[in-house]
Length: 334
Image 1 (tube, helix red, strand yellow):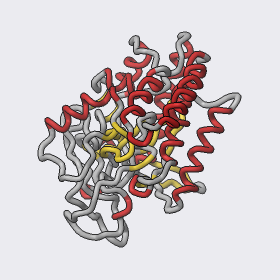
Image 2 (cartoon, helix red, strand yellow; image 1 turned 45 degrees about the horizontal axis):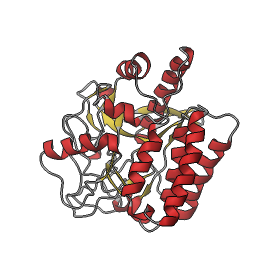
Image 3 (cartoon, rainbow, N blue to C red; image 1 turned 120 degrees about the horizontal axis):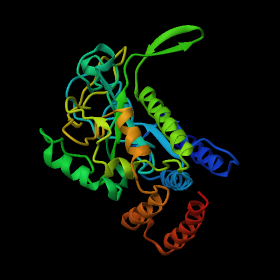
Image 4 (spheres, rainbow, N blue to C red; image 1 turned 180 degrees about the vertical axis):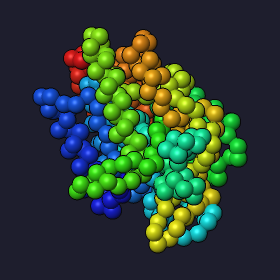
């Protein structure tokens, strides 16, 4: 994951990209994003809301957007150069992984070495730590509130104070993120990160969309409602590990923090529901009758917009109605 200090340039890029996709005469059914910026840089910016609206339009068009959850645990990359163990820092979620209208992908490890699969942790040899937590900008979408509530009741030890328990929880799922082989300039390198696990999941979704199209069905679009409705029956549950540490630094070692989350049975803000089992995911999305998901993003957006303090003004209500009509027309063309 790469974080940019130039906030407006970064978020403008996302707006421009999503607008260009929405306006294109042809487009992919799945996109994978491996960039992120700490939400602490965006708390007083309108840019995340603009990006979110464009993402909603894409999901209404039947497009799935997959985003890497980050490589610096729950604290985020702002503290990467602080050496030490168990320091008091802060929770700092990554955007756009924290948007409700993307599917956020974390990382696991163990598969590459033939050992039990656990959360990817830099302090356990994973090089990076699976990013995750609760958004400080976006509320939890309705389909995931039960999973979040169950996690907060079940997990031990309880997370340190400071996170937003009402925020959108992420990641939604994970995949192995360690020891990917890539070729650069004819040379083979081993890499790690959610920037590897996320596009791998996107490739799975592309294969699933191809199977759905072959049977005369639409693309999966906004994936999250189906994932949460299944209660995680498409994964190998990961119940070992945490995301208290940041990614490993050559100069500073592995900084770790009091703030962070532990895995548990079911969904958690470290690996989501767990590591994707492609056969199970294929069965869920191809062989079972999941609801049409393109319309669900519109309904969820209405719910979240009503709850979100930044959107409750007469001008925003008028804008909301206009956008709903636009999105509904887009949905009917799918």
